[in-house]
Length: 272
Image (cartoon, rainbow, N blue to C red):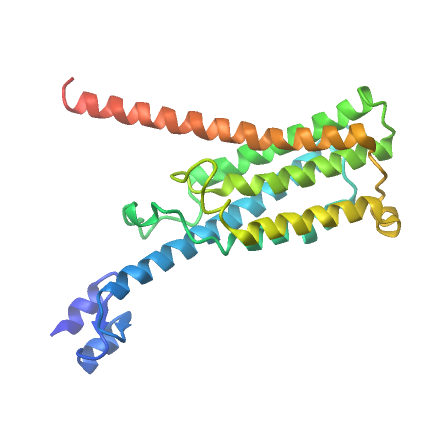
């Protein structure tokens, strides 16, 4: 008698030990231990996995958007290219990959199970996620292009040195960007990202690889990178923090505005 109901349900659950053979065949999930508490654990794991996939995709796409905008700006403005092809490949295969993979190991925010069920028709990336990709992509690209101009005007850098500074700014901005992938209900400092040791390991590894790209001469020659000088390092590291800081400010303003709109809507509905 349970089979029709199990087939009609979004997710049919049957008992593995006490359930009938017909019910087990009709169900989507079979509880091998007949413990309903297992469903809660499974939901938490499923939500965490889905959230991590979203973080992975949003992070990679926003990094790629920033790279496309930086390269496209050089072509449109008919000026020197801020990034060279091999430098872009280095970023894509080295500094982008490890932080993105580390995002897949996050445990999930502490408020994950307090959120309402997600609409089954909801896409992997909602409008909010596409907005995040675009905003951070633009922020990183603008900062990289601005840093390159400052390197030429303030530091009197050559074309190779200015390109190196732009390369480092983009690379470190993308590394900082991983902390922007925290859940919107998580704390600013202590969250599922900052508590993940794999994230920190990926950041250290990428930083070492970036240093090698600049100071290991055979690799530096292949990538057309030079010593950016102390001033260049300071400029690149300082500027790379700007997209992260501005992005956090944007998130805070967006959350505040959403809270105000929700409060106003409730006040109107209650006749206040």
